[in-house]
Image (cartoon, rainbow, N blue to C red; front, top):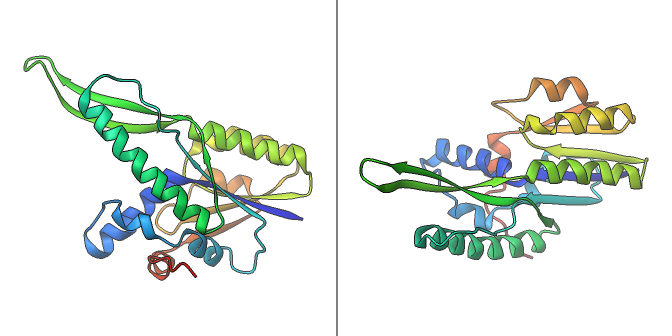
Length: 203
């Protein structure tokens, strides 16, 4: 049987940043550029032979003429290039899908933008499609997914109807009950696992 891990990248990184903030008060992203992702996945799936790990993240493509958005997009592009290299070194395939959308807050009285955030859109759909595609290509596959995004539910329900083996990897301080009802088994990423893998050492 083939076992494939599907990682909702930004979802996992959000939780890792939350762990880091509770440990040392830093909720930033800098430490993620040297995190041992394969290590934490192998630890939470101890005893399971992993054949493939897919990491899902957005393509960096933003259409805007506003300098601040272009600057943010360029910063994210640079970070993504470094991050892709980190994942490659760990034997993880970075699937770039979806896009970044600018979420802007405009103050009409002042006539200026108060803030601009770039958020991922469409990544969950791409992940769901890939899950179904892998199942269609091989009926003897176990799908292991790391996510807290309930937009995956329709795809998971469909996979269950096909008698697909499903494993849900959640987080110790917030599991998704609707996922638990569908899957055959569940694993949990803990803060201790986060601390064990905070530093990636390239051998």
